[in-house]
Amino acid sequence: MKVVIAPYDPLWPDAYAAQQRLISEALGHLFPVIEHIGSTSVPGLAAKPVIDILVGVASDELLDATIEPMNRRGYTYFRKYEPSMPYRRFFALLSMPPGEPAPWLVDIGDPFVTGGPIPSLVNIHIMVKNTWHWKRHLAMRDFLRSHPDVADAYAALKIGLSAREFGDTNEYNAAKDAFVKSVEQRALAWWKG
Image (spheres, one colour):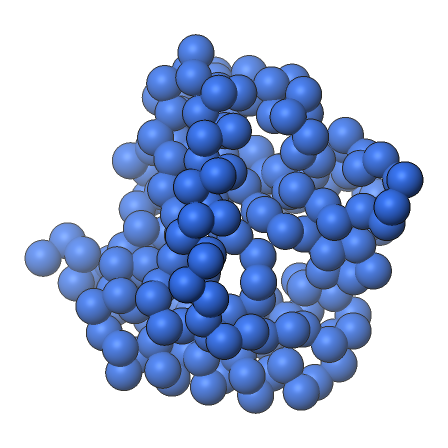
């Protein structure tokens, strides 16, 4: 599979805002903090045309309370990633073929991943706010917004990788992992300062 990297689209913030409203309606009783993250949140940055959203709740005990309300709004719950990331609940808004309903659950061991024949339009990462994982997402976003030279290098890497074949988006993410982790460390140090 080829990963599509699109030029920055000025409509991405509007797409985020529409999803933010739906998530607020679904999870309002949990008083979430909702942030646009990932490459689509950085003006000018080329990206996969997938809106990434970070949702913060007050405690670990509230993570599972997000599942049913998010399912009711049409988001697919990916339990399959919890063994490696127990601190996060992951949901996606999938672009299903006409007439085919989205699954409500992709369970542990299920071979389904986003980015293959059924792409994700929106990825939602729910975790406890103000934890290290929460902060690293925001630090990376803010660092790339403030350092256009680093954002340009990231875009060049992603565009280069888009010429390769990958089994799924997880393989693509692994191919850019060293760059991302390096920038993330710089971003966290910069963000604390």
